Length: 94
Ligand code: FES
Image (cartoon, rainbow, N blue to C red; front, side):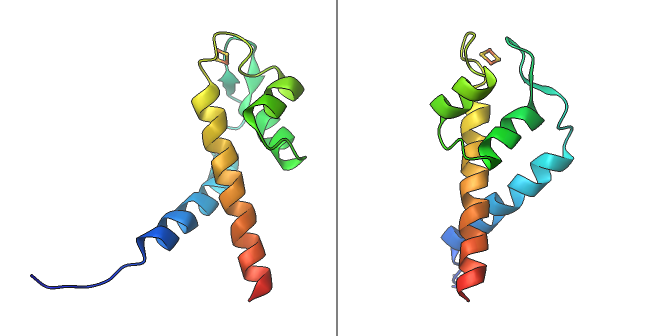
């Protein structure tokens, strides 16, 4: 077997950090929370303004206050933003 090494963890982190910008391009006006008619862009703006948890996003936007069916989507956006922030910090320190 031919061996090669890939820093899988940093590749995953880089992919996640790029996903934040990609999410802004992918239909930001669609409702992320259909129970409360909350567009994805409203959730993303809340995250950029400092909402750092599902609970904070929910209290600021009303997302996730219905049946909770959009919680995983909000958690994904939070993860993308954290990776995006970490990537920006890493670039600043280099
Ligand atoms: S879609 Fe957000 S709580 Fe149901």
